[in-house]
Length: 132
Length: 507
Image 1 (cartoon, chains in turn red, cyan):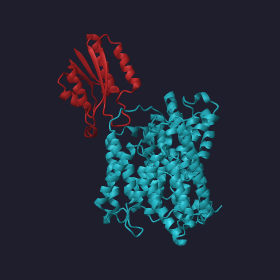
Image 2 (image 1 turned 90 degrees about the horizontal axis):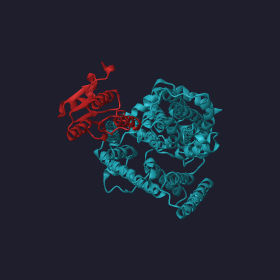
Image 3 (image 1 turned 30 degrees about the vertical axis):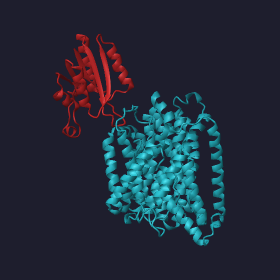
Image 4 (image 1 turned 90 degrees about the vertical axis):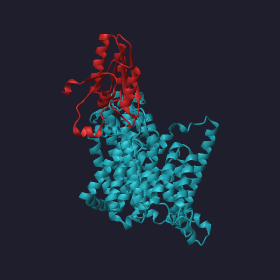
C-alpha cells in the first residue's frame, strides 16, 4: 500500500513528513509526498524551495521502500491533493494541522480541514509538539 | 545664498503636521510599490491622481515625490532578496545584490543600497536645490521656438535612447501623440468621431491609469499562476567597517553619474545604473568578487538610481519636461492643479516649490529610517496573493477614472486603453514614450502654434533662436551616431531584442 503525505515547507508539513517517513520505514510501504502551491503570489513560503525540496528528496532516498516527491501548482491546493490521493489510492493520508484563531478562520480556508472531510481514505492528523 | 533662505522657509512649511503626514504616507506607499514587481511609482501616482481634487497641491506633490523616491528604495530590496527587480531602475542592482544575498551577505547588500540611496538622494536633492533656480532663469529667456525644439528633443531622446528597440519606441510615441490629438482644443474637432464626449480630449488620468494599472492587471491576470520564487531570509541590515570603506566611493561616483543623466532630457535611471556598474567593475580592487557578489556593484548603481530620481526633477520643475514615467504623471498632476511647471514656477509658486524641495530631504531621511530596520518586513509584502493585490488596483483604477468627469464613458475608455496596455506589454512596446507623448504632444503643438503665430506663419522662425539651433544640431548628431551604430550592428550578429522585453515595460 501507499502512504500519502501532504507536505508544506513549515513545521506542520515537517511533522507530517516525519510521521509518514517513520511509518514507511517501519512497514516498508511506498511513500508519496505532495507539495502544492496556488502560485498566485510572488513568494510562497509553504512551497518547498530548491534547498528544502532537495532535503525532502534525500530523506525519501534513504527510505527502504519506494518513494516519490510531487510538487504541483493548482488553483485549489486541497483539490489537487485530493485528486492525487484518488489516483494513488493510499492506505492513509498524513496531514499536519494547526490551531486557527476566529479571524484566521474568517480569512483563510483550511486545506487540512478539507482533506480530512473530503478524502476517501483514512486521514491521520498530526501536530507539532510546540503547538500544544 | 538666496536659495538657502527660501529653502529654510520651505522646511518650515514642510515640517507642518499635514505635510509630514503626506511625506510619510508617500514614502511608505512608495517603498511598498517599489518592493512589488510590476507595480511601480508611476502606476501608484497615476492611481492617486484623483486625490488631487481634495488635497492641497503642496501636500499632494510632497506625497508623489515621496512615492517616487520610495520606489527607488523598495525596488532594491526585491532585486537583492529575490533576483527580480522591483522596478526598472533596480535591474542592475540584482546582478551583484542577489549574489551577495545568496552568499549570506543580504544584510550588507540591503544596508549599502539603503545608505547609498540616502547619500545619493541627499546630494542629488541639494544639487537640485541649487541648480533648478538658475536653470529656470536661463529657460525663462527662451521663446516658443526653443521650447518646441527642447520638447522635440525630449520626445526623441526618451523614445530612441532608452528602449532596446527603436521601432517599438516610436510605435509607442506615435500612439501617445495620436491620443494627445483627440479633442477640439484647436478649434476643429480631431479624432473625436463626432462624439461630444471626446470633444474635451481624453483626460490624462484615464490614459495613465489605464496603461499603467489596468494594462498591468490584465497582463498579470494572463500569467496568474507562476512557480513561486525563493526569497532569501534576512535579518536587520548592517555593514562592517570594510563594507563602509568599499561602499563610500561607489556611492559618490554613482551620484555623480546618476544626477546629470536624470537631469538631461534623455533621463531615466537605466543608463546611469548600468554605467555605474561597468565603472565599478573596472575600478574595483576586488575584481574576483564581481559576478559573485561585490558590494561595489550594489553601492554604485543604487546611488545612481536615486541621484537620477533627484536629477529628473530639474527639467520637470525648471522646464516642465518630464523624462521618466513617474515624472510625466507628476506633471499631469501639476497640470490638474492648473500649475504650469516651467521657468515661471519658481516666481509664481515659490511656497509650493520650496516646500516640495525641503520635503524631499525629509522624505529621504524617512526612507532611510524606514528601510534600514524594516527590510525583512517589506520582504513579507511579496507573499501577498496577486488576486487580492490586483483586485484592489482595478478598484482604484476604476474609481479614479470615473471620478474625473463622473461619466460612464471614461470607464469605457479605461477598458479600451487597458487593453492597449496589455497588448503593449505582450509585444514588448515600452510604455514611457506613450505617456510622454500624450502629455507633451499638446504642449508641443501649443508651442509650435505660438511660434508660428508670432512670426505670421513664417516657418523659419523655428530656427531663429540660438538655443533651438543648438538643440537641432544635437538631435541631428545623435541621430547620425545612432544611425551609424545601427548600420554597424546590422552587419554584425543581430542583437536579440526580445530577451528582456518584460523589463522594458514595467516602470
